[in-house]
Length: 416
Ligand code: E4P
Image 1 (cartoon, helix red, strand yellow):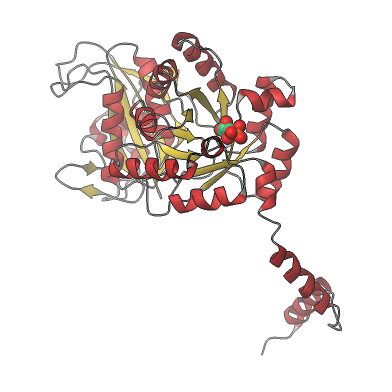
Image 2 (cartoon, rainbow, N blue to C red):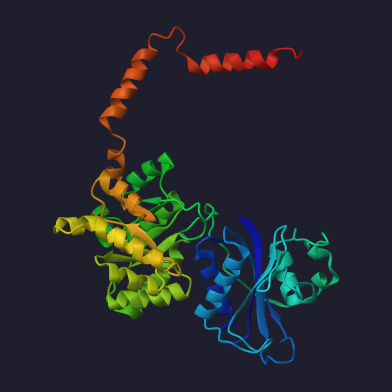
């Protein structure tokens, strides 16, 4: 994990909207987290080729990606937001540059960090200093903020979306590094269950659906907002329109409720159109109601952050739900560029959690009751009862008092 600064520039189209979308995409990119965003600066075109003025900015990120992989992610985001090959200095929809990495320099045929012209470009240097005032040139040790160019005046014309607040836990996502973990989500809209679950320190997110919301009989948006404030992780909130334009509108609004919101859409043609539109703008999407491996391929191709295959509902109709999870995991592994995470859903009992982990699902979402069941193993209960019974024969059973006295004696002992 290291800190880096990415420079952003755009001179074509709706420049401010493109920069905003780039920040959102970067923030949800596997293995990357945006920590801070600079103001947006206006700058005249450089190099005498581009005709339009640029808007420039910078973001401070934390990442587990290798520098080359981060640079590749930046190229992918540029392409996704409409950048086409163009001459150097020419007008462009989006330019993303890896400007600086904390304490490191990189010199390979494909990548130079710090950026080769960082010290000559006020439009890169000024936003960089804003998000990383401590940044130094790793070769000379000189602070960038002390360079005369860093004091130049550039007109600030706007702001970028700031990262999720409160700060989220460091991102470790599928494909990012070898330290990938399995995430556990609560599949409920019941606030009492979510509050109690939060005290366990186990859960990474929450999934809801219209049926779970209806069961609680409370206001949808207030419930989602409350959940997002209890569990600091992705909270799926589902759209209910049946046509893509309205689903897209619902999704964009749901995403504004809280930075943790992940928009959930059904695996229909309209749902996938919605997924494509939202994910292209950096909004995370969970595609739900998946019952067939190729459906998961579709979802990944339109940029879904999560695919939700329903294990229990397949078992209910005498099909092998867990086989669906294994097949999707295999398909995604065959094509590492597919970054969608497999979210094993419709979990009915503890063994479904075990089997999901064995199959390599990235996430398992289960009802609170199922997670509780995992604690009740007869041998755990019997073993614990035996330990406590045996402890009764120990002469001094007050561990806290014993340790406190022992520590006090140790610290008051004169040193030799
Ligand atoms: C979660 O995202 C799903 O909506 C949920 O797991 C469905 O579970 P069910 O089949 O028990 O309704």
